[in-house]
Image 1 (cartoon, rainbow, N blue to C red):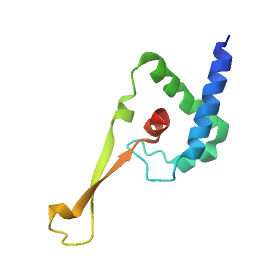
Image 2: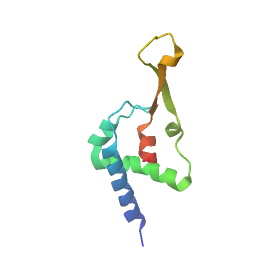
Image 3: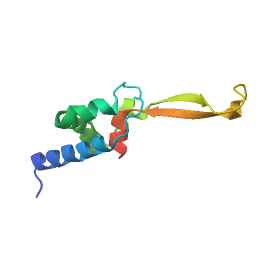
Length: 100
């Protein structure tokens, strides 16, 4: 039987594995970059595990994790043609960890 402590430890290890898998991309709305979490080690994994566990238990995801920043990025071609743009969406690092 899993105890709460064992379950929490397992979750922290899973979050630490997910942090290691993150790409070093631009931050989302929170401004937290993956590199900061990677350098934070187990302490960062512990901090991120708490809201992830709460979201799993309650079924309610943090509002910040449901938001994304969308920016149009020009492709090659005419910069005045709307068809020459693609949307770049920045998702919060916490949301990436939650869905991985």
